[in-house]
Amino acid sequence: MAAPTARKLHYVIWTVGCQMNKADSERIENFLDRQGYVPTAEVQQADLVILNTCAVRRSAEEHTEGQLGQLAGLKKRQPNLAVAMTGCMVVSDVQVMQRRYPMVDLFFSSLTPESLQPLVERPPDEPVAAVFDPTPIEVGPETASSLLQAQRAQEVMRYIPIIYGCDEHCTYCIVPARRGREQSRPVDEIVTHVEEVVSEGAREVTLLGQIVDRYGHDLPEKPDLALLLERLNGVRGLERIRFLTSHPRYIDERLIEAMRDLPKVCEYMHLPVQHGDDAMLRRMGRPYRITDYERLVERIRTKLPDCSVSTDVIVGFCGETEEQFNALLRFLERIRFDVVHVAAYSPRPGTASERHWADDVAGQIKKERLWAVEALQEQIAREINTALIGTSQEVLVEGQERDSGSRWKGRTRTNKITFFSVQEESPQAGAGLNFTGRLLRVQIVHASARALQGRAVLCSLPEA
Image (tube, rainbow, N blue to C red; front, top):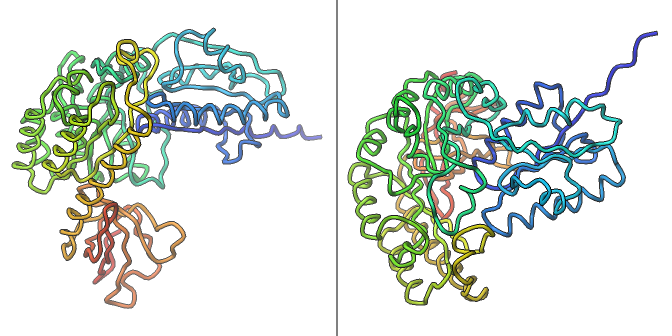
């Protein structure tokens, strides 16, 4: 009699937060795939559930705690279900974590997916034991294989971490305490990583770091981001390169000129400012003045006239007055960003702002200030995007628009989401073709604050 076939073990990874978390989840997927685990979309079918968490705002923690509450109920019905937790909510004091989240069996660093081995190797029918490994991993050539993300051939755009951690001291931010000191990956390792994802179908990469323009300062050869961009610009099959998040303090002329001169580097920069008032910037621990920031944006736009610039701002920070908030609005009117990501301040335990200052802006006032920024930015973004009507934009096609059999979705070089149809000038020009991963010229016919709409005309079959 033939031996029974062992059943496949399934996993689910639930991710919340920034692009770095998404890249970390891909690395964890890669590890689990090598162990023979199979992804599933159904938590009820999973043998292992991993939560990759964010602690930047309280709302993100509440979202995670809601998921954990549901998993606690599921574990009562399925006692052999293993639950692991990683990301910025995980602190090194395991006893605190276990008391707070008793339904979690393993807390681990996202840089060390190998820490999952005790859960992965356990017989799936045995009880789950709580394990924790707080030891940080040194990022270097010897760990390159564990740093490679899962290859997803259907994904046109991929995130590539190039520097981990943060050495800055923004008073509102918990990230340095959770992700540790800055650790850059070697240039050759990153180039190999990009070549691998391109071989799997990626056409665009976004280089990631908490402060991406700090890349390389901790490596023996002292490479910088401009040098890395030069190397990646030569990768065959790669069409576009982006990077985020940048810090205004570390943008130099060499990087701006690399963006101008390297054809694969897109005309887009995410440059968080956080506020429009110098006193608030000092309190936030941001080491520049508003005039410094404005001069930097002017230099970028002088050398890259078509460059789109996005930013982050915080409203309702400790002690923010009405006058200071109005200074922020005036600043946004002067700069005219393409995109503004706005958040209401929420104190994070362990940060300098939480220790030293009261959260003294009322919740309703925070909401009203957030809404005011959103309303102003919607008007500015609509005006910027409307000016593109009638222009032809190069769009990298990401796939078909959801619930649409005829419209496609992609992004311009300046990172503007674009929906478009394909107009055929010959009967076979576009019939039955999959345009995912192709670069198409799209004529813009309509624009809103958040997206462009247009049509692509195919005169002949695009090159394979």
